[in-house]
Structures are given as structure tokens and as C-alpha cells.
Length: 248
Image 1 (tube, helix red, strand yellow):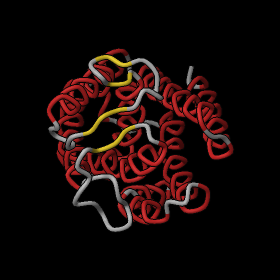
Image 2 (image 1 turned 90 degrees about the vertical axis):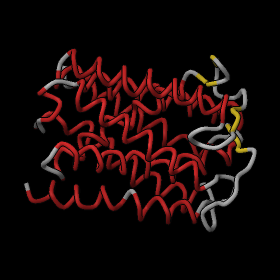
Image 3 (image 1 turned 180 degrees about the vertical axis):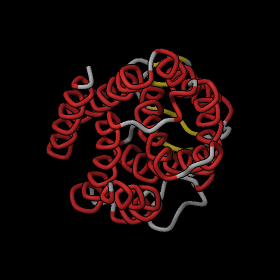
């Protein structure tokens, strides 16, 4: 069963390699496919390594919770600022594309597993996992806004070199990520807090997402500032994990 996440990871990597070589509707389709593959990878990995309770907790907190916070965000402007999705990412409910909560789930799981190896106490793990997940958005939002998949109505103040996205959005990500990781840790059962040898596919996803994002933003997508911001902030979680993993 553990082979399934590895197969999904291989398909995801190939899809993302194709992404910068395309444009228009094909690129949007590859975006959706990437998210779906990432979602299946994370949920299937949680299921085969931690059991039904952990997988159900991941879906409840990240998928359902992700949809609810996005629906609230689109309707009210809280907690990410006033923003709107285009129609390029597929079907929507309450103006939220259905793949968006899948994206929360895709990266929430490897962020949690990374934190397991870097922190000992529950609350340190929650905080570190939340920072790792929120840091990923330093790559995600600049790329997706650049493609026109969503936009902010009032995108200021923004990070230097990263126009179009208010700083408050990243704070909103961090706040929700803290809630998500707290709920996941408490609802997932005792097995969710134990690192396992079979975590390699999900951790490989974590490393690949970081490295490929830095490369794509710096070289292929002409987004050097987000490559720098994401590389430094997400790297604060990724690099220590790489050091710890290399020592084992």
C-alpha cells in the first residue's frame, strides 16, 4: 500500500515539470491535476501509515476546514483580505473552486510530518507545522495571482517585490494554519504524533515542493522576489529537516 503514495508523487513531479512548458487552459488543467494528485498522495499516506482516524482528521480539518475558511474569506474578506477567484480552476461552491480546500490538505500533511521530526512537544509541533504551511503560500499566491486564478481587491501593503498580495493574507494563512494544526493534532489520535519510516513519500513531497518552487519562481516564472521570500521563510523549516534527515 505504501507504493501508492510513491506512484502519486511520481505523477505529481511529472505534472509540475510540464507546467512551465505550457500556457492558458492547458496550464490551468495541470494546476488542477497537480492539486488533485497532491491531495490523493497526502490522504492516502495518512491512511496507510496512521489509519482511518488520522486520515479522517486530515480531511475534516484541512479539506472541510479549508473550504469553510475560504468561503468565509471570499464572502467577508476575513482572514485573508478581500479577494475573488476567477473561473479558470473548475467548479465552484460559494464562489470557492473545489480544488482550493484540496490544496490546503495537500500541503498540511507533509508540513505536519516535517514538524514531527523537528520538535518534541505538541505545541511546538503545531507552531512549526503552521509556519511551514503558511510559508508555502509565499510561493503559491504570487504564482496563482500571476496566472490570474484569483486577485485581491485591495492588495496593499504588499511584501517588497511581490505586488498584488496584501501582507495581511499571509498573516491570515498563519492564523488559520495554527487552528488547522491544533485540530489535526488533537483529532488525529495517538498515531498521528509518531514519526515513522514510511513517511518518506510525504517528506519527499515536502522537499520537492520547496526545491521546485524556488527553481520555478527564480528561473521559469520570472518571480525572483517570491523565490527569495519563499526560499528563506519556508527554508527555515525545510533546511533543518534536511540536516536532521541526513544524520539518520
